[in-house]
Image (cartoon, rainbow, N blue to C red; front, side, top):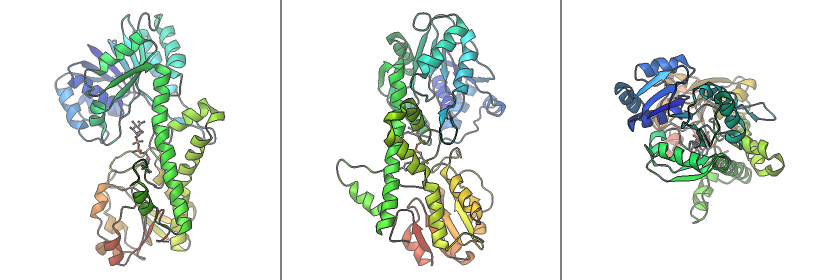
Length: 418
Ligand code: SAJ
């Protein structure tokens, strides 16, 4: 069986490698020549644990190769980006899905399967993808070829494990399509596969990420409440989570990445009159970078002429992905208000060491809790800083050694540390 995977990003490339590892012949398609050149050498351009190894093995075995455009195959998996555009009114940009559909349609043959993995607004498979494929091929979905939505669910940092071991929701435009998609995923998925219709599968995926976004917003809102009341939210959350039916997520400088901060908009736009809670959650999370900048300004007594060393630029810990990172928003606010901001990210660059960047800085601002920052040495940093101040947005810096080294530590959500 030959599978053509369109889009070799964080979702498509791992899926292509696992399909190849399961013995299928896989062509991976991408518009980025850098990605294709790396793949031709058996290499990857993204950091994800285990991915270089499975890609190298599949390419060396001749099971996985790259191409700049789709090729005829038995099955096509579309794993292309679906970003949002616009500021006040964020709308899904389906251009990449539409382009992939137009490229695949002329290649479709009777008996083929097309699966959309990209997260998309409800109705995309039925109302956008289906007509493009039918018009471009002259075939009829459900009659001549199978069409399904099987949303990816993988967590960056744990993608390979979750691709194999996380249950899948498979939504067909009819039951035959759902069954055909299940048979394809059964080649490497070792978890449950649950069949439904395509629009339900689209909504399920959006509900999952919206659930996380709204719950992070709740944690962030309590961080602000705790600061106002002089309470430490981190202690309060630990205690609340001792209740058997309470599970708070963690406050932070905002919600980033290409999924959680984006997908709730697909729901809001699909049902604008019915989603005040989801929209409010987005507003709370989008307000966190401003709040963190205010925390730093308060701690420093103003930002003008101050030097801040920002640690962590990626959207979350231990990934190299900078997309939609709230750290960027924090840094922009600080710079606009007159601070000089030096930046460091343990996952993105290995340029100037933190100790050198700390020389003369007024504040160390921890934005991302990369494991590598566990090795920060407050005793070594303290004498280099102009002022011994650390602002911790992730409850990451252990208080005892930092205060022993003379630092004042201000924690997001800790009304006692301000
Ligand atoms: N964050 C917090 N507090 C938390 C958890 C996360 O502030 O308690 C922040 C992170 O720092 C980050 C953002 O939220 O900025 C998103 O990170 P994440 O780890 O929650 O999620 P993603 O975007 O890496 O991956 C999510 C996952 N969805 C869910 O957990 C419901 C993943 O399973 C999806 O496949 C992925 O979105 C996707 O592609 O849709």
